[in-house]
Image 1 (cartoon, rainbow, N blue to C red):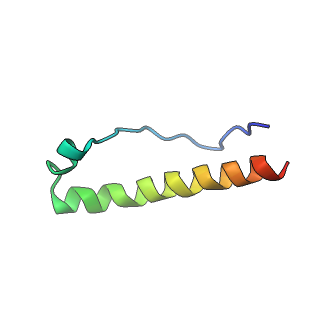
Image 2: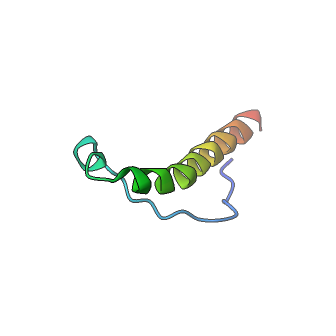
Length: 51
């Protein structure tokens, strides 16, 4: 069963070519929300698999 998320994310996907255009500081800022999104997605899948 699909559960509604309690929040939402705006995604801006970077390809390999575009990733190199980001400065180190920009990559650092984007890493935290990307990791948070990834972890939330994993938790959602685990919860759905256990139902």
